[in-house]
Length: 107
Image (tube, rainbow, N blue to C red; front, side, top):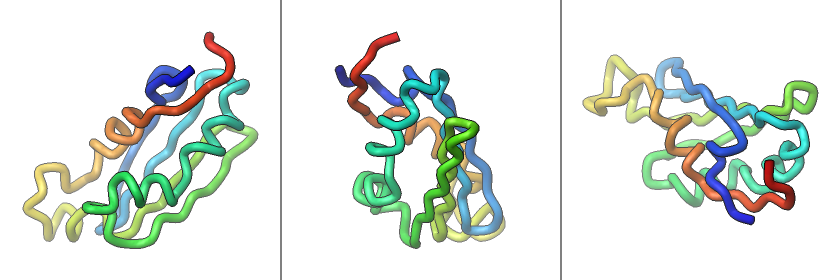
Protein backbone atom coordinates (compact mmCIF):
# COMPACT_ATOMS: atom_id res chain seq x y z
CA UNK A 1 0.00 0.00 0.00
CA UNK A 2 1.13 3.57 -0.66
CA UNK A 3 1.37 6.05 2.18
CA UNK A 4 2.94 9.43 2.67
CA UNK A 5 6.28 9.07 4.42
CA UNK A 6 4.96 11.21 7.30
CA UNK A 7 2.56 8.40 8.22
CA UNK A 8 5.46 6.11 9.12
CA UNK A 9 8.29 8.54 9.92
CA UNK A 10 9.20 11.92 11.32
CA UNK A 11 11.90 14.33 10.23
CA UNK A 12 13.99 17.29 11.22
CA UNK A 13 15.98 19.71 9.08
CA UNK A 14 18.64 22.29 9.81
CA UNK A 15 21.20 24.40 8.03
CA UNK A 16 24.80 25.47 7.91
CA UNK A 17 25.46 28.10 5.30
CA UNK A 18 24.14 26.88 1.95
CA UNK A 19 23.95 23.27 3.17
CA UNK A 20 20.82 21.64 4.51
CA UNK A 21 20.86 18.63 6.79
CA UNK A 22 17.74 16.45 6.87
CA UNK A 23 17.11 13.46 9.09
CA UNK A 24 14.25 10.99 8.70
CA UNK A 25 13.45 8.38 11.36
CA UNK A 26 10.80 5.69 11.00
CA UNK A 27 8.45 5.15 13.91
CA UNK A 28 8.55 1.35 13.61
CA UNK A 29 11.70 -0.59 12.70
CA UNK A 30 9.70 -2.83 10.35
CA UNK A 31 9.47 0.09 7.86
CA UNK A 32 13.16 0.96 7.85
CA UNK A 33 14.30 -1.30 4.97
CA UNK A 34 11.42 -0.12 2.77
CA UNK A 35 12.29 3.52 3.41
CA UNK A 36 16.00 2.86 2.73
CA UNK A 37 15.10 1.36 -0.65
CA UNK A 38 12.74 4.15 -1.67
CA UNK A 39 14.02 7.40 -0.15
CA UNK A 40 17.33 7.84 -1.91
CA UNK A 41 19.53 10.80 -2.76
CA UNK A 42 18.67 10.19 -6.41
CA UNK A 43 14.94 10.38 -5.68
CA UNK A 44 15.35 13.65 -3.79
CA UNK A 45 17.39 15.09 -6.65
CA UNK A 46 14.80 13.97 -9.19
CA UNK A 47 11.86 15.28 -7.16
CA UNK A 48 13.37 18.53 -5.89
CA UNK A 49 16.11 19.13 -8.47
CA UNK A 50 14.86 22.61 -9.20
CA UNK A 51 15.97 23.80 -5.77
CA UNK A 52 18.56 21.17 -4.84
CA UNK A 53 21.39 22.47 -7.00
CA UNK A 54 24.32 20.59 -5.48
CA UNK A 55 25.19 17.04 -4.56
CA UNK A 56 23.24 15.06 -1.98
CA UNK A 57 24.90 12.55 0.31
CA UNK A 58 22.81 10.00 2.23
CA UNK A 59 23.99 8.38 5.44
CA UNK A 60 22.19 5.33 6.80
CA UNK A 61 21.67 5.05 10.56
CA UNK A 62 20.39 1.47 10.92
CA UNK A 63 20.69 1.28 14.70
CA UNK A 64 18.48 4.37 14.96
CA UNK A 65 16.22 3.38 12.03
CA UNK A 66 16.99 6.63 10.29
CA UNK A 67 18.52 8.34 7.31
CA UNK A 68 20.51 11.56 7.21
CA UNK A 69 20.79 13.61 4.03
CA UNK A 70 23.38 16.34 3.56
CA UNK A 71 22.25 18.53 0.67
CA UNK A 72 24.73 21.08 -0.69
CA UNK A 73 23.57 24.24 -2.46
CA UNK A 74 20.07 23.66 -1.11
CA UNK A 75 19.30 27.04 0.45
CA UNK A 76 19.90 29.58 -2.33
CA UNK A 77 23.01 30.83 -0.56
CA UNK A 78 21.89 30.34 3.03
CA UNK A 79 20.24 32.55 5.59
CA UNK A 80 22.66 35.48 5.15
CA UNK A 81 22.61 35.54 1.35
CA UNK A 82 19.20 34.30 0.24
CA UNK A 83 15.94 36.15 -0.26
CA UNK A 84 14.24 32.79 0.24
CA UNK A 85 11.63 32.88 3.01
CA UNK A 86 13.01 29.59 4.34
CA UNK A 87 16.71 30.38 4.47
CA UNK A 88 17.19 27.88 7.30
CA UNK A 89 15.68 25.03 5.25
CA UNK A 90 13.17 23.98 7.92
CA UNK A 91 10.57 23.13 5.25
CA UNK A 92 12.74 20.32 3.83
CA UNK A 93 11.44 17.86 6.39
CA UNK A 94 7.81 18.65 5.51
CA UNK A 95 8.46 18.39 1.78
CA UNK A 96 10.29 15.06 2.01
CA UNK A 97 7.73 13.63 4.44
CA UNK A 98 5.08 14.30 1.77
CA UNK A 99 6.72 11.75 -0.57
CA UNK A 100 4.77 8.56 -1.15
CA UNK A 101 6.35 5.25 -0.23
CA UNK A 102 5.15 1.71 -0.72
CA UNK A 103 4.90 -0.38 2.44
CA UNK A 104 4.03 -4.03 2.66
CA UNK A 105 2.59 -3.99 6.14
CA UNK A 106 0.21 -1.41 7.58
CA UNK A 107 0.39 -0.40 11.22
